[in-house]
Amino acid sequence: MPQNKVQVLRISDTVASSLERRILEGSLKPGDRLPPERELAIEFGVSRPSLREAIKKIASKGMVRSRQGGGTYVTDRLESSFFDPWQDMLGEHPNLREDMLEFRRMLEGQAAQWAAERATEADQTRLDQAFAALNDAFLVDDLESRSCADIAFHQAIGEASHNVLVGQLSAALLHLMHDNIRLNLGELQRTPSAGSLLLRQHEAIYTAIRERKPQAARAAAETHIDFVRETLAQSLRSAARRETAARRLHTDSQPPASHSS
Image (tube, rainbow, N blue to C red; front, side):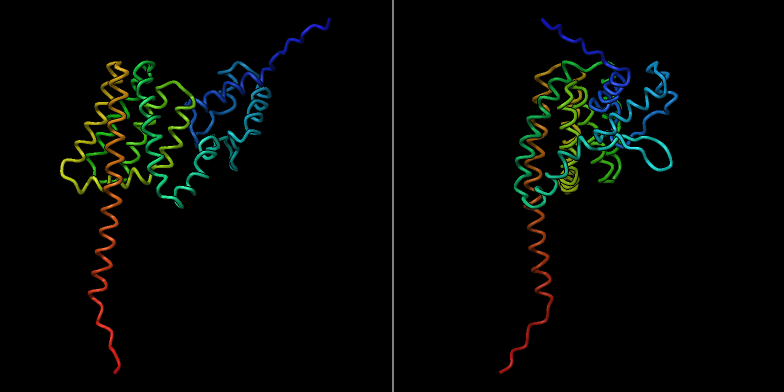
């Protein structure tokens, strides 16, 4: 009876797997440059030829790419494989925004719950930094800074859930909805005290995760998304009203057409 062959992993396979894991978990993000070969070889305790072979393996999957002038960088393949087709669909079918927000409610509620259960000290430190940056961003009248800080805060929660798919899908979904997030924040500026309300919602999520209260974290995240959904609906209605009023004003300012007898 033939014996089963024992599969022996090559050193390069082990290193490639470790690098892939770092990309999947978000330790290495799109655009990040890999450390120099010498440093990585020392860190993994392997020869530089074995390291190069490992990098070649993950490059063949499109996860990293060498750039002219030196350096190997993480690509956005994992994110763009989700983002690209949906970006086009969202532009052609605006009603998909509601489905996106419904999915985001489910995803971020679960992410917050797991983050409250699983966050390590390092995760808590990153969350502290993201929440502090969010507070600072709301002190500045800059929509781009606010939206980027908002996305970074929610992404820190997704990564603290310690579920690779949640982290990757959160990143892709937040990237996809970046324009909507900026639109929401812009519309909120027209509403008195809305900014402080939004910050309190984020603080409720942050505090529940910090205090390790999973159900409270989930509820706070869902409440926040419910608020975002309603705000987006209001902002779209307000934008439509402003466009209609602007067209009427333009029409009223035009001289009446002459009628020949």
